[in-house]
Structures are given as structure tokens and as C-alpha cells.
Length: 160
Image: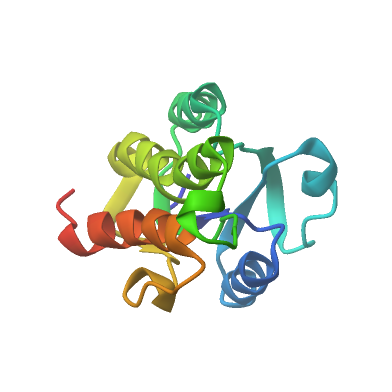
């Protein structure tokens, strides 16, 4: 596989779909992911391949890493455009919601990135979309802010 392959995580979302379309228009081969089989069916036609990837499920993440490794994929770009949001004060945010926010917005992407780094070709690019909320936490969105800040911090720290 050539290094013009991009994996767009969250290609079923608005931003992910636009990114996938733009990459395809620029000559990239795009592998798109969605969190469910139903949402994978509706991925943009710009995705030459569709993969189900649930960032809240370590087995799903490991399965995608193993699949791409087995195929000898050489990724030129990895874009993480997936995420979930929650509103409300921390005291009123259920523990299960906090756990899901951290899994989908932070620990899942970090696990995926860690697993795919060996597949990055040459100077491959890794992009994570954490939003301004990662830098400027917002009242009433503390758990969401924390989950996006974790991904942002890891991205800024870098260090393949």
C-alpha cells in the first residue's frame, strides 16, 4: 500500500465527512471509520473503505490495529475527528457518562494512535481534533472539557 492512504476516524460525523471528502479530492485513498455498522453504511462515497471502530471498546481498537497491520498498510495520515459531548456540572454528570467521554475522546484515540504509529509511513501526519474547549474549559462542560484536554495534551506533547 502506498503512503497516500488516510485513515479518518469519525468519518461518519460532519467534520470527519468533510475531511474525508477533501482528502479524496486531493488524491488520497481514504479509509473511513464509524462507531456502528449502521453509521458505516452511510459513510461518504469518498471513503474507499469503511471500518467499524468503537473508540470506547479496546477490543474494537485492537482489532482495527491488527487488521491494518496484517494488511501491511502504510498510512500517510491519521485523522481523529471522532468524539462525544456532554453538558452539565460535574456533580450532576453520571459516572458512566464520564467514563464514556474519557474513552471516546481520550483513551480510545490514544490507544489507537499508539497502535498505528508503526504503520505511519515516513513523515506521516497525525491530526487530532480536540477543539478550543481543550484549551479553554467551559463551565457546565467540565467532563467534556477534561476529556478533550487530555487528547490535546498528548497531541501537543507528541513524541512518536
